[in-house]
Length: 115
Image: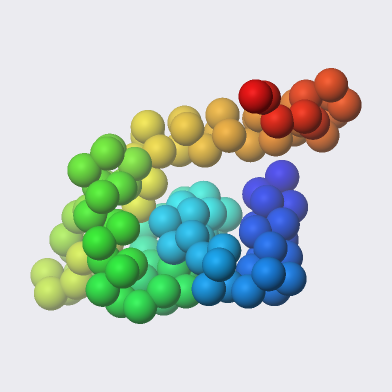
């Protein structure tokens, strides 16, 4: 389901322009969630996954940390680096999101947007 969501998100950007459908926070959440090993990423690497300017990405990362979606920790091998990973709450919310997408795909009556 994650690969379908990522492709759908990319399709929007490709069809309508990424300047209209740029969602740096979603790009980063999807990137962290899609990693099979669920290991943390460096702050710099995660900023690159946002497909947004570094300043915008950092602002989004800080917001997601404040909302307990992400956890920020120093790299144990290099104290100059900061690692970022999904928090348990962030993982739980994404699990629920993808479960909701599966429900929409499986049940035609859920395909209509609520008013």
